[in-house]
Image 1 (cartoon, helix red, strand yellow):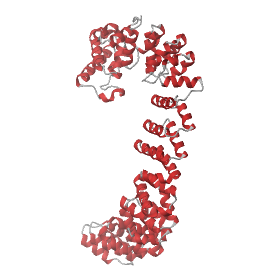
Image 2 (cartoon, one colour):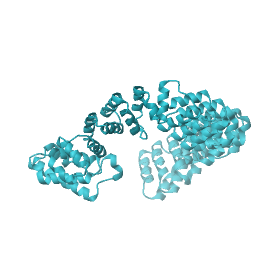
Image 3 (tube, helix red, strand yellow):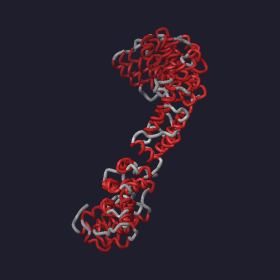
Image 4 (tube, helix red, strand yellow):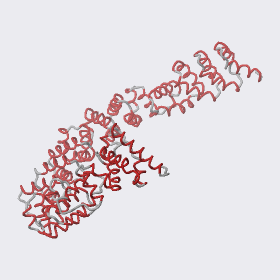
Length: 562
């Protein structure tokens, strides 16, 4: 066959007539020139199945290694000719088939795994090791065959358990149990703590262990299995072995499960379980309800460790925990041994007369308790009753910008109640806060003292607090800044926009350029703080657009650009 013949046959193989393409392939044989192999490989994708079939057999007869990978790929892409292709690749040798197909057994696509497994059985079975044969049998769900490979099947079964369907997982776990070796049991046991296995997979493993292997598995493992299944009744008999998995549940589970774990620990009635309950009660990162459940359990055993824990809880960051500890200590007629303990107990019991008797020593504890909403105002009042030292402490809190605003508000309000002038300055700083509620609080509290607004900014704050929007245009620049702030951080955006529109209509020539630019860039949405309110209403958006346009026009009139 000369070059002209190669060119001619190549042209025919690429022609539009399927019969001619088929006839051309039929005339090719083992003596076909190597130059024709690429075009025959292209024929594997021919739209005509007869042409594709002839291309497969022709390539098998030629035996050119360039055709091997395309034929392997055709196994997975052409179901119609899969059996023929499978027979054809055998002509290239068992080892190449094994090397090409064995890695596909671990494909995440089950369809590809099944095709590879079937092909390996027909082309390279004798070259596969027992682990690979076990993998093939698992893919084909030949579980009786799988267990014959015993030790070699364990790793493939474990891999299957981590990524297959629920049905196959259950069959795989059962196969491990049927293998019955210590290694198989250990593999099942290890899966209970394997982070790569999801909860449903662990539940399957736990069920298989309980149904088939309980007699041969260590109690600690069976306790873990019972925890996975949340079989609380089965857990209790394991005693100390159940404590470790229960502790893990207390760290990682949802709130209801943690409460059930606490209740299970109560029934175990061992010192080790009691210590875990105390740790749960002391854990400030734990759910509040779980801590309370643990406290009820601890109360059943009045140990020195529990009493010590209760005393520490008098300084807990949660007020209900403090009061719970105080109630338990009082019920057991506990007597404080230090002044600090006396103060903490009195505070938790709201025994203000007793607390007041400790004078200045009580002040740090009262200041630390100001942030508790349920007792904050009462605590602030008690500080005012402790003379200059208590009042000074309140003044320091009110002026401390690093503290929560709610704590500063309580301190400032208590100072205002006793007409202490040190309340005025902290409250005046709140008049410019972005939160309208804080501004209103500051105004209303200041008005309980002898304070009178002096600057335009303060007068604006008073008008806003009392809803006197019609007066605001009289205060010029101070009003504009306040309204711009309200447009971004307040539900009073409609009033703020209307006020800005009024100012631009009446006195736009006196508005500073900076404020004009701010008005020109107003947005049609409320701040992130009010996302639940969504965008502006249609009417508000209309006013917002009018404010922007008026501000832009005024900027242009002054020769300025945005």
